[in-house]
Length: 139
Image (cartoon, rainbow, N blue to C red; front, side, top):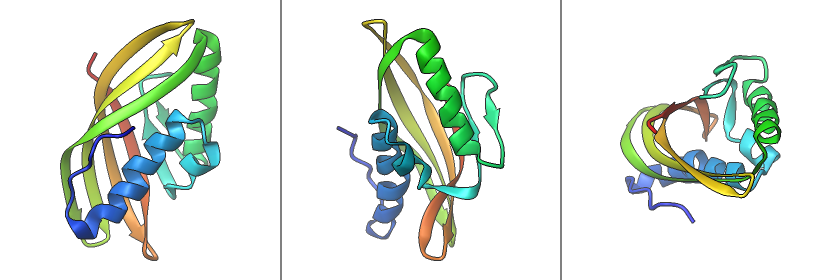
């Protein structure tokens, strides 16, 4: 379902928790699972209005706006596939750029959008959380 994420063995947990889990939860509309990977101060930037979500509750507010967008356009499914573009970990902080393909079904027709997801992460009490998620559409 998802692309292989080539990372060092000690960073596999970051990949599993911070790339694979949110992509799966987003694609399957698992709201609670998706929200669980974000830190308390998370920020989201995306290609739908209002384009930037800040605290409080940025991930939940973004999901609410995504749901409105889906309803307005007649979206029946979305699937995000990805591969790792760049990765760096320094202590309790990490940064990654993911090359993504978002396949959206709108009123029965598939639309493919490519882009990048840039992330920052922080390890809080042994758990990696997303601090920033930014989608940059390239098509």
